[in-house]
Image 1 (cartoon, helix red, strand yellow):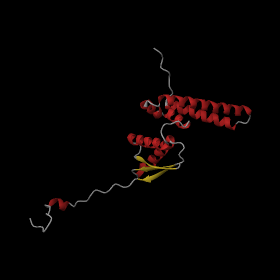
Image 2: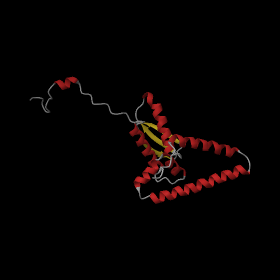
Image 3: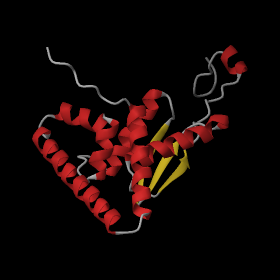
Image 4: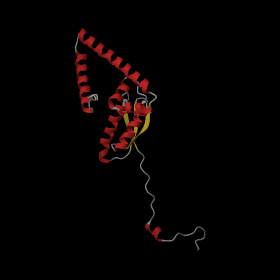
Length: 182
């Protein structure tokens, strides 16, 4: 029986991505032909890996469950977006992300549409948890649609108050319509 390959967990991936960002930042600030050549190599490698991922997506495109699993994987989903091969539009990704936040109980939010690069989100509830909910929603939306520039929050309409029925009305028999005589 073959050994199952070890996969990086989310924290390890985040660590690697942070290290990559730092290394690329250093490389970009380094003058000279060697740094330029290294950046060109990184760019070509990224392009080739993007093409490889696109070919994988082409081959699994008819298998909806598999495509959803790929989209739901945080790292793969980000790579699909990075290489502009994600099968969902930005709006679809945002709606799916907000649905997931609602299911997790992280925020009661729904999409109110997009205007260019601005996403409008209707956020229910208020109080002391509203600031945290807004930040959670903002981070999730920007991760799902990194080409989004701004998240604008719209207050959800207040729930209609319950109809008021005076207690006295419950204690008396209804009066029939008409002249009021039984």
